[in-house]
Length: 286
Image: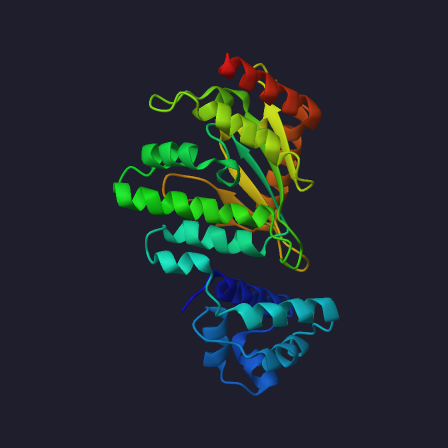
């Protein structure tokens, strides 16, 4: 089974081999393995036993202990499936992969110009958004996707994770805070109260992009910057109706990291954002 962790392991090993200037046959000669085995591991079609990680990395000239340890941990968990596996093929592949990446992440930065980030949505808001955007889904599938979204949110308070609860930095466009539900008039009051409550967590930071903000890179569309403990590279997720597309190319990551910095600069500071959310909530309540 090709889990996202197994694919990340294979991709990292391929990168190490290429950096060492070795073709597959040279790597096979250095390790005494069959070249086909190395190809299968790199393509996530074969399991790499933990005991084989260090010798393989040594063949590639990798002796840094933190890197070896991180690779061994990924090899150990490469075949594990997460809680989302119980939902079968319900979520799109890209969404399953994103949840898998999120589970291993240290922090995530997200800009959402049209809706609230999934990690911050209350169930009824999530239901309305999923119903509107997952246009091919049945009512039963929508219910399951809402349930999945709620389970995802546990990552913000899970102290058992190696890196602790996921750090979330979200920039939300002010217009999304004025959403009006046709069937649940009090929905946004509840949702805005939830946003304020979430800012009480030390790992959750929310900024509001004012309607009259200066031009900024986020005007192009939503994206996530997903960061991992070293040595794993940062991953960029570009959202779309089918889930999203990922890239971890260095040049792309640099562009989106810089873009998020400019977006933060254009948005209200964290404390001012909290007061903006509170003000809109009070207006909604009146």
